[in-house]
Amino acid sequence: MIYLKSDAEIELMKISGQVLGKAHAEVAKRIRPGVTTKELDRVAEEYIRDNGGIPSFKGFNNFPAALCISVNETVVHGFPSKYELKEGDIISIDCGVKLNGYHSDSAYTYPVGEISQEVRDLLIRTKQSLYCGIEKAIEGNRIGDIGYAVQSHVEKFGYSVVRELVGHGVGKSLHESPEVPNYGKRGQGVKLKEGMVIAIEPMVNLGKKNIVQERDGWTIRTADRKQSAHYEHSVAIRKGQAEILTTFQYIEEVTANTSLMIEVNEVTIA
Figure 1 (cartoon, rainbow, N blue to C red):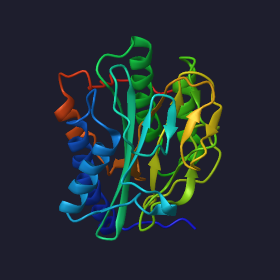
Figure 2: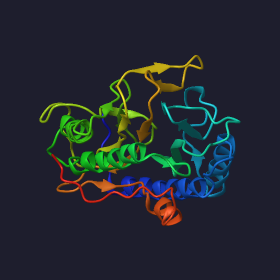
Figure 3: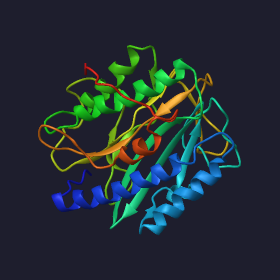
């Protein structure tokens, strides 16, 4: 079942999204060679709880942490650990916050120190594809319009879109209907209605689309071990223009003029 949210409910989700955005920024401040991914998880959970929230991911289907931390070829659902970040890594941070009874969900991929231009381009274009999808998230369009916008943008650069993992509805539950694939055909799928809230989250591989699940039952990596990028916003469907409920503002403030900054220039949507 798809739950439509009232304006009051969407406002509560936006408040949750602000706490989430600031938690991301606290993590971003600490991303550098030598820091462990477990330390980043500690920082996020502490900030969320200190600001009245609950980490949405911790305990969700027995997931053990506040953050999904995915490094290099890991696509999503990586566990925080004693792994120390290295110069040239990329790290995707996926996080959710439950506040006032509602979840928000967003993700961001960072370079660690200097990375190759090839990989930086992957990050830039994946982030662009998120906004391509958001532009299509308006009343009267269909889920396929979002997936088509993401897919057509990244595939023209030779990248591939993960098929098995998709975005989703979000609200009182972390994962609600409908599913929101990052591929599709225009004019197909569930019709978008004002009041729907969905998480759009392109997962884009430098190489082929094939993925492998590790033995821990959670961690997903690329089969060819090439890098993967992941960006995500929670958005409310509106007439004419989607309303983004999460925010990268605080991330971009703390990463401005650093190697962590991933700038996205205006993009022509297919």
